[in-house]
Amino acid sequence: LQDLVGGINPRTLSARLIALEDHDIIEKLPSGSTRCEYRLTDKGKDLLPILQDMEQWSDKYATSHV
Image 1 (cartoon, one colour):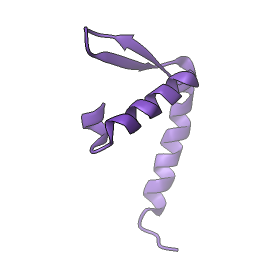
Image 2 (tube, helix red, strand yellow):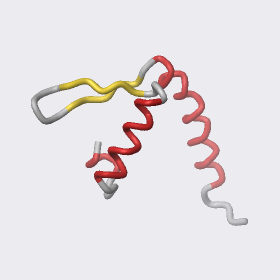
Image 3 (cartoon, helix red, strand yellow):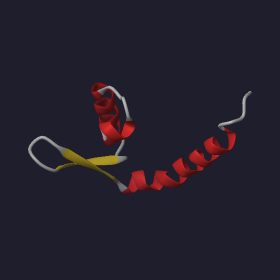
């Protein structure tokens, strides 16, 4: 995940992942002795259409200046 988000502080990433777990948006799955994987919960999957709409809105107005 850290490589995908580009340049995020590991502590910040960890704190955000914990917050998402605490809100049942993601679940943590062990995948080896030192690594883990994350998966969206049903609650997290329900957020996808909202996030996609926000991305479309951002793309539409990204070049606009207020």
